[in-house]
Amino acid sequence: MTIVMFGGKRGGLQIKKHLNPIENLWAELKRYVRARRPTNLTQLQQLCQEEWAKIHSTYCGKLVEDYPKCLAQVKPFKCYKILIECM
Image (cartoon, rainbow, N blue to C red; front, side):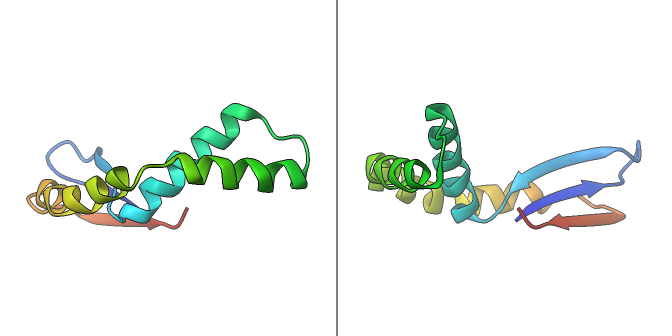
């Protein structure tokens, strides 16, 4: 889930942040798989499994650990509109 906030003094875009740690993890996996350019579904499945296995558990822990900090960054914004986009 991505939260995009509009409003404030200038009425423009103020912040765009992935607030759900799993979304950041999926984005990371997607980036690695895309870089390898799979050409068919079988290869896509294989590359997803290979790249998933390479993601270290400390990366996952860091995403969860940073979650409160991420929320604290978003909290002070007073917005007129919040748009929630599902990825």
